[in-house]
Image (cartoon, rainbow, N blue to C red; front, side, top):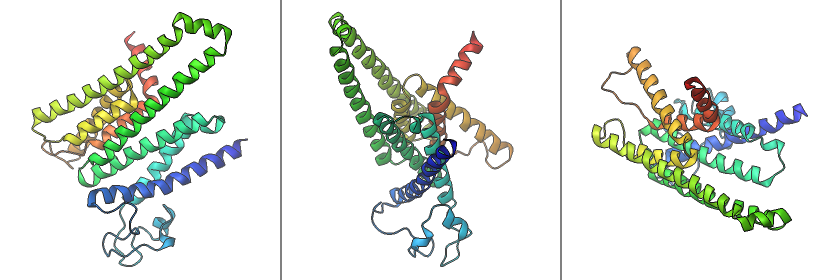
Length: 296
């Protein structure tokens, strides 16, 4: 029923608010070197620990009118930004893979995978905005997590396919003709294209860093490019990088026109790469199809 769907997605959004609050804390503590799971959240100014009633995402920020309960200094705007952003991303992902339309455990595994990757993206988004830093430990965790998921998904898919075919009379014939082997080779070929394109993206960034002598772009962007390459897969990873460059250029141009920045100034590029990758994930295939139809 429709009202039940609203409740389900509302719960996903609320969970996103709580996780977004945690991700903002992670972004702060990755930058300061504090233990992520050690110590309570505290005010950036007076350092006093927040009370339990001040830890409700978004609601506490609104009730406190964006100010610390103790010293009255303004709370970071990144609190509501990270919370709302995570809530929206989680709901969008749930709708995209139709998580509540399926009783399959695999759908929930896929959703969990995407939720973790987008959480990594949000931490990168926040750290680059706050300090112009893309922490290696966050991106490397993303590498490992995605590769483990891809390998696990491949093993499960190969086993399931073989098991299904071997228990069917016609499937046994297909196995003998090499159909299953062709499936495995096709998957490995696709994975190979993904890895090579991810390496190519990272190499392209390192080339830009070399040419510009590190002005406006750093090694963190190159590593993030590799992460995007793995996550989006070929050719959507190329589209995601292009979308990141395009939105970054448009945003920079707007700032220059408004005289907020000059031609010599630089901006944090990581958030635009994250945005481009996210757009590629949700809308990449439709946009590529639309573009190819125009060319034809």
